[in-house]
Length: 150
Image (cartoon, rainbow, N blue to C red; front, side):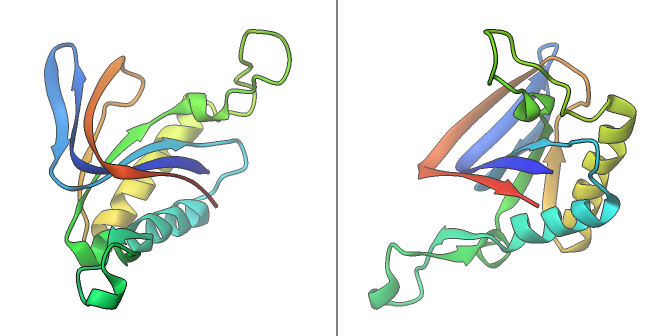
């Protein structure tokens, strides 16, 4: 399981002209699933995302500006968007191969499991629509983009 995680001031996802999910400050997560991912991986990913310390620490002067606070600690929200193209292999030729991406019937329940686990941890979570053409709109909160794998 792999995710591209962007710290955002706000983010939303639109399908067919309708906003289907939106958040304020927090994390925009593009989530990819591969063939051998399991529900245990989903739980591990949720825990990693919710606890990832990528927000600036306002607690003290000596830590000002350091990334030392998690989304959980910052009270942030999470937007999770399924993204099978994270497993696109561009190593050969000019057309990506998506052989490493899990089939939709495998991926969808695992994406839902990550969302459920995040909610169980206390996160406010919005989502995109699985297998839909989605337009993502976000405002970066600084240069903070990370690749997370479990």
